[in-house]
Amino acid sequence: MSLTSDPPIGKAAEGGAEREDYSALKVVPLRHPWRWAAVVVTAVLVAQFAHGLLTNPGWEWDVFADFFTTRTILNAVWITIQLTFYGTALGFALGIVLAFMRLSRSPFLKSVAFTYIWAFRSIPLIVQLLFWFNLTYLYQRIDFGIPFGPGFVSFDTAGLVGAMSAAVLGLALHQAAYAAEIVRGGVLAVDGGQLEAAAALGIPRLRQLRRIVLPQAMRSILPNAANEVISLFKGTSIVSVMAIGELFYQVQVIYGRNGRVVPLLMVATVWYIILTTVLSIAQYYVERHFSRGATR
Amino acid sequence: MTAMVDIRSVHKSFGSLEVLRGIDLEVRSGEVAVVLGPSGSGKSTLLRAINHLEKVDSGWISVGGSLVGYRRRGDRLYELREREILKQRTRIGFVFQNFNLFPHLTVLENIVEAPVSALRRPRKQVVGTAEALLARVGLADKASAYPRQLSGGQQQRVAIARALALEPELLLFDEPTSALDPELVGEVLDVIKDLAHQGTTMIVVTHEIGFAREVADTVVFMDGGRIVERGTPAEVLDSPRHERTKAFLSKVL
Image (cartoon, rainbow over all chains, first blue to last red; front, side, top):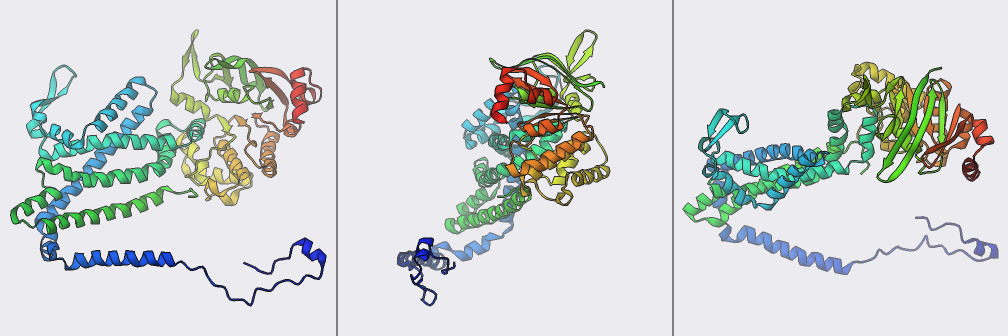
């Protein structure tokens, strides 16, 4: 900043008034003593926490190190990743269909989608998973054929809905309800003029959605979708009630056997943190891709 | 000259509000028609009805000899499928007040999109056309810019180039300069004037009286969902016959 700007006109008109010269003075920045006090207190607390992590024998870091990369744990991590992947992929695929059903002009399609979302958001995931796991009580066989008529292909539900597919099904159906609302919100956030311009240019309907609407909707869909994927990823631990060997279940099995609860919970915790970090990094790059042409 | 646009007793209501109350209008091939009128007079709705962005309640509109939105078979009119309507629209260029450029696509991609996806033209050829069009609206160096990096006037010129890329037989302008800073209006009007001088058929809804006087073959004055009067610029702007037209012109001139 310049300190030698012109003096006010009134003063200049008076003529003689000497202009103060500040350029030789020393500038003293504002001090923040309380900020420093807060820093000291926080630093002490952080140090205590870190000290505890390192020195408290209860953490049993040696046990943690022994189990962190054992075959059983790695397999369990892989199953957790698979559950997340299939749950997300199927969930969002169905969610997109539901979102466009809710946005359609047909009152019937609208209300079906609305009811689905209402129902699956109302049922706790754990209750739903147990339902799917026990599907055999309701339907012994599933036939594909003419509705209400003869079937051409049929499956025994006991063989079809194994624990793993029941889990994926449950996670995906649950996820679809939330994904549908996120996608719908994203589509609604796109300016109406965009669709109008696309329609005025005669761009085919499907192309309007794929090329014009969805890329713009992605901007508002992505942060919410990333939240959902991460919460689904951690939500896979609920699947442990179905005795599927995912991360949390496997950790419970091991500490049930050897009694080392804390270090094994830390094994699960650190894996969850690592994979969430990977997802967050992926989110950053995907969001950057979809922000082309945006100013903020 | 033949009628490029033929509008017959068109009515349109939004709920209980009747915005078009029997519009009859003919625009010949190569004619420039400028539609004036206070806001709420139905001029934008009329323009939007011409390319079926708005469906009319009764009456009919034909462009280039074919009915908009319907097909005649015997003594019945069948409503067209969306795909067929989209195809009809490729023959009618529409320029919006708010430009409506696609913000996530570059200027070039904005122009190339419709000819490639709607007319199935080879991309390479379309890119050549698009570059020529950009040069024509004075933006040859902005091909790889995104819309938000451009001024309002530049964005509207891109929107005009985008409409021209489909080689439409009719251009519709819906208040093309109303969203612009005053000093940017001129550059957009110059592009439109240029098109007019080259014999493009167009209907322009605007509040720019000076532009109407200079470019229009026909000036149409609308009020309350009706065409109050139409004629040459000299007739309508300099010696209006209706009180309503006089009152409007005295306010905007």
